[in-house]
Image (tube, rainbow, N blue to C red; front, side, top):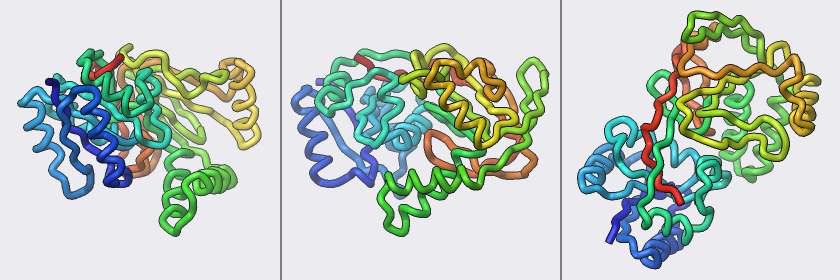
Length: 293
């Protein structure tokens, strides 16, 4: 019988959630152990043991949980088998991997044991599986988390934080140095880095068709104002975003960003950290062996 070690996000770690996960794996005929993922757990040591036993290592939560477990795997065990139970809010990684969004379906995928090599991105030694950004988005996330801490609903917090960040609207002056030595001086509200290419137009905007091209995609909006950002959004809905003078994209394997501060906020798969400048980005091709349908 295949075995799985499941790391369950502590915010989702109720007795009911744990019981539901265990039942889903029993139905899929997979031996399962559930551990609550919190700040006190020795994640690297537990993953060392699981990897040595050939046990599938599973993240149960949203994209932040996926990032946390994936980073620990990439650090020492890139050959370990990685599974995802998408029990978070948005589950971008699971959706882009075309994984089932039910516990029962995801557990069956893990039990089947079929894997695919998937890329990760890295910035200053920190891993991301979806995207990383500086500028607008990290500022919005910090405001959202402050509102949630004082009791606001997560969706209301998101809307209010987005609106406030839009009103504050600040530009970054960045120098982007590509691997070929080309230097790009830009004034932009954000620098968004995708682990593989993001669809930027139509109803599929914000999704990825593949996660194994071995490339990062860098997106900026040079010179954009509040009004031009709104127009850029409308252009995306009309499949005309690439015609906009405020849209810029580059396909790279590595690059560097300097933003004029010694340290700054950087978003990694929806979580915000502070990293020193310059920011050194690179792709990590095929470092995750993800269980897929």
